[in-house]
Image 1 (cartoon, rainbow, N blue to C red):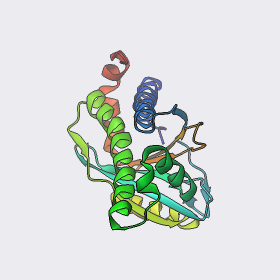
Image 2 (image 1 turned 30 degrees about the vertical axis):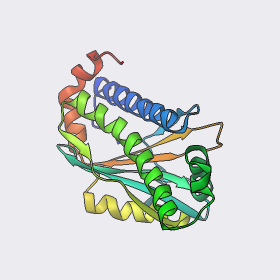
Image 3 (image 1 turned 120 degrees about the horizontal axis):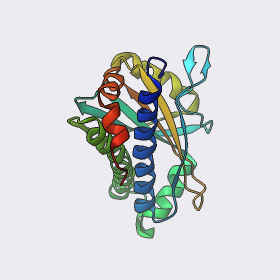
Image 4 (image 1 turned 120 degrees about the vertical axis):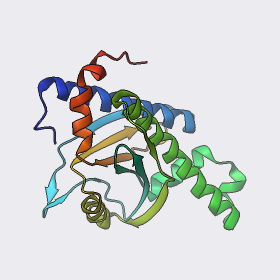
Length: 209
């Protein structure tokens, strides 16, 4: 993905992604009230039958929370949970009366809780992209898509064609107390690389706070 970058530009990219995604892990921690950390960042995705393996989750039903980037940087991200992980996250963050009832109001509250998680986590990364690369960019309203695990990678690949995405990477978070490891897939257009090249010195000089 970063073959056309100099060593300095690769260092700037790694610093930016590491910092932004670490901020996302802190957002997880704040929302769920328990330890959360950035486990890994994978910028070289394996391919099976020419389909990039954006998501590695194999459970039968998978929840994708999508945020589209709007402004100077185009692309999208998916925060991905299994069905079991969704239940664990909701159990940790929602009151018992919501969890025990299944009516239109409580279903809406459960959905809004998930989209709020995505809004906070994606927003943490987008803010750092904007600050470090001097961009006007924000995330659109998150949307939830539920599908079988074996459909996820083809679904994201089809989106990548529509968006003409050239930059792809996957972050994995760890929330050990809940036994949850959400995956966070990003697909960005090529101008991300152009912005990194133009701002590499600035990114490397910025102090991480």
